[in-house]
Amino acid sequence: MSSSDNKPERTLADLGVTRPDQVASLFAEVRAQFDAKASEDFIEILWKEWRDQWLGRKSGFLSRITDNWLKPAAPDLKRTVGACLNDLRAHVEAKIEERRLSIERNEEEWSLARERVDLSLPGVIRPVGSHHLIRQVFQEIEDIFVSIGFSVVEGPEIETLYYNFEALNIPEFHPVRDDMDTFYLELPKGALTPLLLRTHTSPMQIRTMEKQKPPVRVIVPGKVYRRDNPDATHSFIFHQVEGLAVDADITFCDFTGTIEYFVKQFFGSGVKTRFRPSYFPFTEPSVEFDVSCPFCGGTGTAASGGTCSKCKGAAWIELFGAGMVDPAVYGFVNYDARKVSGFAFGIGIDRLAMLKYGIDDIQAFFQNDVRFLRQFP
Ligand SMILES: [Zn+2]
Image (cartoon, rainbow, N blue to C red; front, side, top):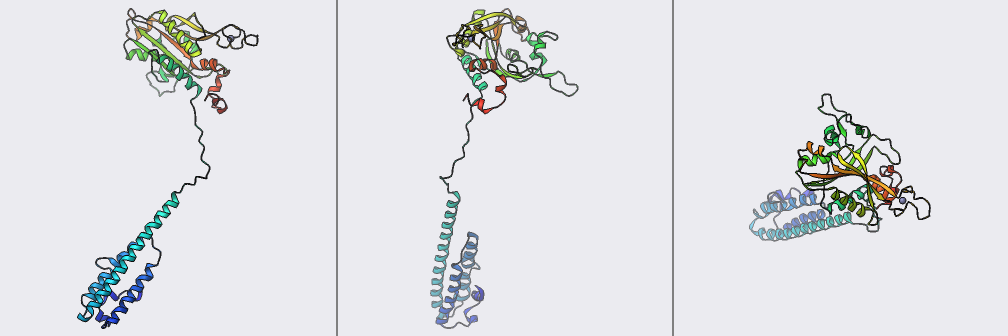
């Protein structure tokens, strides 16, 4: 209030005001000073300060005027002072409220301006990914086996010698270990057992049977590792789906029937299957399953009349190995080999995907080239 700042602190007598017209001009002066301030721009915090300066209950100017001008006023001035004070109070309150509303309005406008969305701006295009072909083939195989009562289990990629070899009837110095050379983990000195990256998904046969009494029907999709040099058909990492069914009365017919059902579901009902005797340490008897070449209809001759390039004229394509579970394996998991029987198979996913989708280089699965991946949305 500049020069009149201290006027409400003093009494009328002190200010030399003795006539009603002096009272009126004193109030006019105060009001003019209020109005000068009222026309300034306020932000909320300054508005609050201003409001308290005028309307504060103890030390606000209006309270001071009440205490110092009205209360001690001489009887002949009291009415005028009271009326002027009421006018001033109404004016001050109305103005302060008006400014409060305008601050609120401004803030709303500001926040609207801040949050305004410009629909004319070009959007951000985020490409939607898709499942990798390997994942899609896993899914396809899982769907087929789940539909005939198998469940899906997964297991560790880091294994012990026991689960990867010994419990699968592959003792140390067994020649099969040469084909399954793999990567060993560097462990601190004194580690109890070497750890390796599993060479097949078969360890989960053992882990499942250890945990579960027959009947068992599981498939195990997953990554496996071998020390192979990369070329068009070899990779040090690839994918398998292991299958295992063990129950009281599973026969060789159940086994071949299941495999045939799977192959027809996967390649189409027109294909034929056949099996040839083979050898795996953990199955007895063991077989290799072949499928009649789906590309030349099992004739060995391509549509052009030449030799079919997929089966090289053989009319059959080798699919995967399988067999009846070797009774010796049941000994490792406390199953009674006289009471149970079952079959197991190990499907190479990469090979199957290459066959079905006509891919000629296994490395394409691991190179993350979007030109390749986009072909299998
Ligand atoms: Zn063919």
